[in-house]
Length: 442
Ligand SMILES: Cc1cc2nc3c(=O)[nH]c(=O)nc-3n(C[C@H](O)[C@H](O)[C@H](O)COP(=O)(O)OP(=O)(O)OC[C@H]3O[C@@H](n4cnc5c(N)ncnc54)[C@H](O)[C@@H]3O)c2cc1C
Image 1: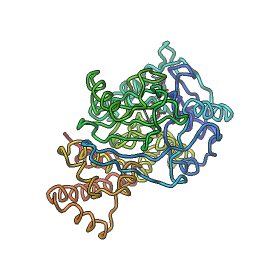
Image 2: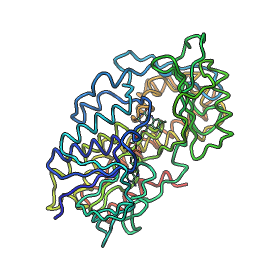
Image 3: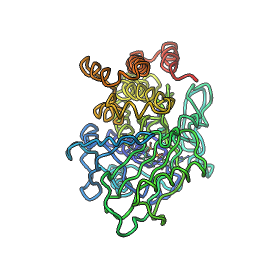
């Protein structure tokens, strides 16, 4: 049996998995389409510090991360600013992604992983429903026992799979967030804003979010504008104009960023393993659907996959029977909650004008609930909290009932999604997929 592993994609998900798998004794080769310096974004992104302990990694060097500031949530009609007000030790890490990527690369290379840049993979080589390796863009065919696809949401390799593997090849654009993040100069003599990190929910009543934050060195304004499914230039310009009205720190000069990007914002794919193949990170839609954060879950999933192939229950660690355990574990620990949060995201996107302002303004949706949902956690309210919410929201009882029904549906979906059949059995797996996807059918 071929014990070589090919990892496609050298952002954090691919590099973290590659290092774990190499340390577990496998030969690991990573192919990355871009140059090393272009792989990671030129900015900081947020992650919960405990992620490193959970996956069994040390914290990155201190100089490559700082602390996120508290978010302030602004509903569509801007009737209220809800400041999270978390103590410093509960705030996320803000990681400088380029040096973070370089740190992960050095760890992987020290472990003995071979990494090839500017080497795009064209497709998976599949015979009799077994993935046997990959074909590179340059025509070279490389055999492998396991191909781990960490190519992101638009993975060309996933798209190349035959239908018979039953893996979703194309992620619907309405399940993605089209986003532009731009750093503008902060004009001189502008006052330090009271709310340094404002997140606009359903900004100007559109299907998406925007944010305006003061950069860590306080010299720039970090503006993100994202919409679900599509974002025209006009939509972007309107949203930017609105943000400028509220935030005098947004100057006219672009310092960095500004490219149009895409993030998956849906529940995880219903199937992300096959014989000799596994999806990992954004390519399996492992992001938190409410925010599109995917660094932590991709890293955790990488550790799970490495654990599963290192302790196979069948002779072949790369068989679908064995890899299935990785998907089942991911869904139990993370994916089930993400599925529930996806339902909440859809509910919010489809809510009527004024509803989000009412829920936040009256405190029906508490700070605690907002914090939980944005961290991708399941929302659990005690009977006392429910009663309090009912009193606060009594003026809009139908809306409250609707919300209560949603919470019940989320609980049910979380249970379904978290409990895949214990062992791989094709018929039972397909049946579970059907049940899991049902609430999301359009
Ligand atoms: C504006 C913005 C803000 C974000 N903020 C946060 C945040 O605060 N916190 C957070 O956790 N997440 C955040 N995210 C999401 C986060 O960036 C992703 O979840 C994460 O990068 C996914 O990592 P990945 O390694 O799975 O995939 P990717 O980062 O998409 O990496 C895929 C890699 O595969 C390579 N590749 C693609 N196709 C091929 C091919 N055919 N052959 C070889 N290589 C290929 C690509 O070049 C790329 O390097 C943000 C995303 C954006 C766009």
